[in-house]
Length: 118
Image 1: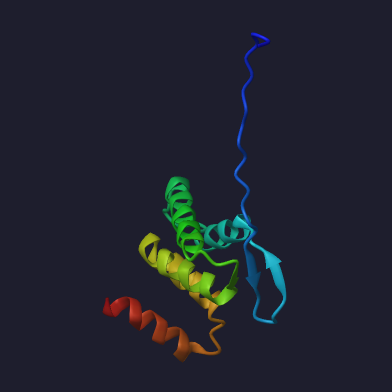
Image 2 (image 1 turned 60 degrees about the vertical axis):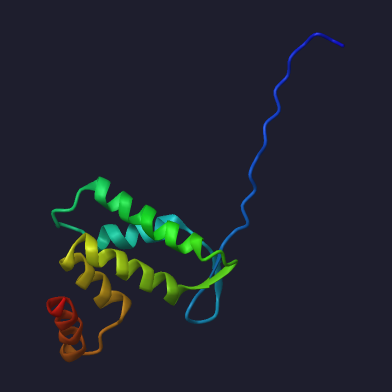
């Protein structure tokens, strides 16, 4: 025995999550992209930074709970929209208008009606 103490550390290795884009390109998951989308939708809205971070955390938890190595970006978009709905209705509509790429006022109004009917 040498009489000395040493400590060992374990490092958890995570498998990178791959996002499959609409054009079939693939990219590594990036939390910043979700944060930026939520922040942009919440611009000039009465939503606290803490609420935004909790929403992004909830989105990320749902994404990783799918336990998939590859996830379509459309799945992530739907998860984000689901969480945005409870965060702020105006921010939700803003996000939806970009995500769903509304072609005209009627499709935009259809989305608004869904919110109003709830």
